[in-house]
Image (cartoon, rainbow, N blue to C red; front, side, top):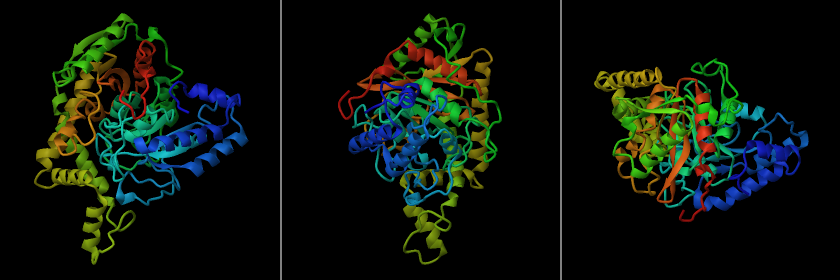
Length: 489
């Protein structure tokens, strides 16, 4: 069983009409995951007993027409807290950690009676661009298992890309939902910062972290985003703005007539592969043929994105990860002889090399001798980057751009060069800097691998972003092409 050719509404109708039971769907999904796991390693845990029990309960209670998620198996990135179910953040530090409460997004999904079928792999503490930094081994791209699935939500991206689930939760700090979306040929989105509560998310960079979805299509993504959005008293950064029904607001090609779209020249340089550039240029022509206007615009501080992001995000990581000290919870070194040993050995043995690298970078940036020279300057440039978007959005409704510079790279090809790995985020981090809604939609193929187009909207204007993505999807067939799992596509 796979979910390539079905959407939420179709599966829901099958459940309501009793063509299939929630338990049967859940069992089929679990079997499919198990069959693929040796090739993909998309999951760190399959919640077989819990998922089947929850599905059986849904079948007993019945499903009403307005309960679209009831009995639907979805996956959850393993840095999102799930009550009683191990949440590791793909780190030895939390290898045996069982939360005693749910993240707000999980509570909202439980209210809709979804089935949590498993916890997906990620870069440790969401720090990475390829899901090679997991303490439990890398995830593989379903289009070609010699290649990375992107990161840090690579497990969620691969699970959806392989057709194992209709949707999977991820987190996006600097592109970690959208890049796996691009590299796995699926839709990946993050809403405006504050639209979705961060309560119960294992923190990396608190002013950047956001929860988003990876799905087979735009409509499902829009619906699921509405479900998890809204104010949360546990998260003071969450917005109390009314949450639209994004899926209900989708329209056909008429919704882009008169739309003003900006295409940043800084995103279309020679660093972008010719195939990806052509894909974006073709997308611009398609929008123009449907009545939109596409103009070249400028986001002049784009080139500052990577150094600024890796100063600010690592500084926040250094602070957030200070809680893992071998005392309160998490990994504790076995041979510690005094309190200093507990701290030093527990953190040295519990964290992987990339996490330690970022903690050290962040600690340096926050140190007395470097704070003004690095952290404060980076914070100022971040505001300048956000102002670049403000200037463009005075005259344009939406920004379109490549999601990345190229398709997926081979596993192991960039792990020895952290700087090169960091540069993969050059087109994705600006939207996080400004806290803007952004989405990747399938836009083409190169060398047998998919790539995505990035859409960036105004603050809290996810609807325009979803509309434009939906129109593009309805007028192309990239999303209809699927991997031959493990084969050379």
